[in-house]
Image 1: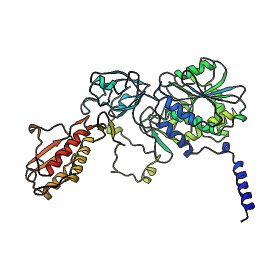
Image 2: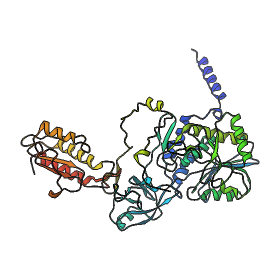
Image 3: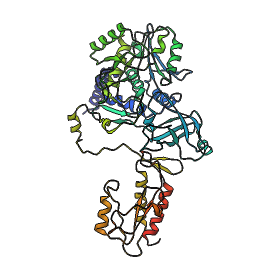
Length: 363
Length: 167
């Protein structure tokens, strides 16, 4: 084969690959897992979101210019013109904060976020300090046999005095988690802790990876917010910064699936694997029905699965409501919410990212 | 909201399957063994937490001691027995098939044993004369059962002496 022919073939291959633009490739389950798994395994209890924020920044496309505001929210803006459409996914996860150190060296705790603290009982613990992670254990109740309800949960870091614990660098306010791992289950399902809201964070990153900012018809802002689990605080700062200027906001957060064997099916049923969910009504906000209908029609036309329903709890988008900004929150079905074994279907992550992309490019 | 522990009637394992056929396709069937996912967790000054950490640390001490010690008199049987927490079938089989023993040391995760708390022999004929060496544990029987590795090392040194014929 002559040198010329080799060169020509190489050139043709390059032309062929250029036809399939990266922006046109569908998002795959493996790709979603590749972004989601490290995010799930990062630690970031409310007020200590930096490790997660740094990881999100690493996954941003090259064109994206990220900014961190005074609250700790991470922003990426793209496109120009009205309406400004805002997407918000939260960085933080539930966990504990140290409220005191006992004379025997054990740590007193308070929950950061709403969950059954007994889920942490008798599990390994990680105390996050300025000097690194200090391992310990969440203490079991005093008698696992006779005591039916959990007592005050504490952390034992293996010391026997307050001074010894303080010498490890542990101070009041330090956050406490348990070790976690992303685990792939059968088929396209996966489990782990803090899928809430790393799935939302991943969906925004996956959508961004397919967006050409030069082709957007209006401005969009992607916000990875802080302190959602303790009162939507980061989103409140973002909402105040933008005021009434956004035309719409989309909080991207969980939707409790209610499809586990013991869940009542009459309320909030959104089975895993059947697509993302429009969170049409919860305790914080009611989405305008006309917008819900419009998005459903658009997704149907694009052949993207999209469920809708009502649930409890609040979402970051509601913070924008006080400025008169319509909120159409989006979620994905989540089993065993706020537990160490939150469970998802990766196909829902893919479709959530595609719906976000659809909204950015066409709505 | 109630935070009471669930019962076995409420215990399901979700493997990510969507049907019974999918579960069967994974090779899971009635009587398949299910455990919790676990990993040894180090904390404090040489503490190790894990399910049954005390008993496994005692196994490790015996294993390491058996690799180091050489019996100076008689014969020594080293046994790692099964079903100790269920029927004690393993210990009884060793005692009846290889015993009776002139003396025996049973290792387990317990608090330090005193003569008053010595358990009755599972078989007085084949296992009449025995001691229990307990490896102290904290949070016994929980997923974070904790053993001090220094204590396990002391047990190992004691076993080396005992296997070698010392007291």
